[in-house]
Every structure is written in C-alpha cells, then in structure tokens.
Length: 213
Image 1 (cartoon, rainbow, N blue to C red):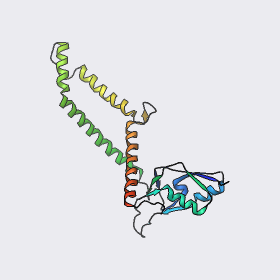
Image 2: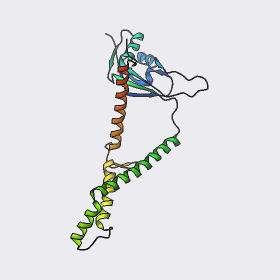
Image 3: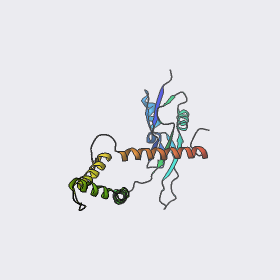
Image 4: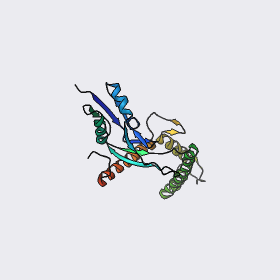
C-alpha cells in the first residue's frame, strides 16, 4: 500500500530568500516522517539574484500546484500526493522587509489623508442635503425661536456621527467592539484576493505560469 502525502499551500506565499524550498511555501504531513523531512529541504524555485553591488528587487511568480506535485514525484515516484490547498498560488519574493519606522510613517500619512478626506466628504454631504437648514427649521418649529447654529440637535448629531463610525468600523485604536473582523479588514482581504486572482489569470493567459508541461 503506497503512502499518501498531504500538501497545503496558501493563495499568496511570501519568501525573503531567493532559494525557495518546499517548507517555505507548503505545509506537509505524512505517516512517514522521513519523507516529510526530506521533502521540506527540496528546492522548488530559485529567484534571480542581483549582480554584485546592486540591490535585490522584489519579484513575483505564479505557480500551479501540479508543478510542485511533479517535483515531488521526481523524488518519490510511488508517493501519492493529495492537495488540500489552492490549485494555483502566487509566490512573492521580498528581499528585505522595510524598516518599522517607514511602515509607521506610511500608516501615519495614510491616516492623515483619510481623516481629512473623510471630513471633507462628510461636510460636503451635509451641505448637499442641507442638514443645517433642516436642523434650523426643526428647532424653530419645536422651540418657537430661531436657531443660533449651536443647539442640542447639532451636538447630538456630531456625537452620534462619531459613535456610529466607531461602531461601524468596530475598533478604536487597538481595541475592538466585537470579535468580528472590521469592515476595513474584510475589504483588505477581498482586495488581496482580487490582486492574487488577477496575477494568476494574467499569467495563465500569457502562458508564463510555472506549470507542468
């Protein structure tokens, strides 16, 4: 009875060294530990290294899991391989992670842009629908006198708007209102999936995918 190797590879895999081994991209399990240990060290791809004196650049390759199964078959022809992961995946080579201070700087600049952009959007929306006029007329009808522009209506609306945003986005700083992922996290995951799908489909159409053949 032949042994079965179970292999699982995520849709997007990042590596930091040019020489990629199977353990860098996949999770492996088999009843024969010796097979697993040997396969983990098997080289599956080599990114182009920079010429001496030049800086290494990031690179992306698209793979079919059939290519990985083929490579495993060269080492163990009688081994049954069961894929429980993605049929195609993106392999991204990042030579060196950016400094933390640079990441914080980018995040800070992005927060500033989003803050002022959101504030401008809210103000233009309120101006377009005439929220100030509605509040003024409502206040005059109920109180019998003209609004000075700073009444409980404006105060409650401003507080409610801020609380609504915090509750909707489900976090304040590092604290979350619930354990559910935030809408921003959901959108980021969807964006990452769309990017990976685009890479895979483009390479498939161009015939540049690392596949059996």
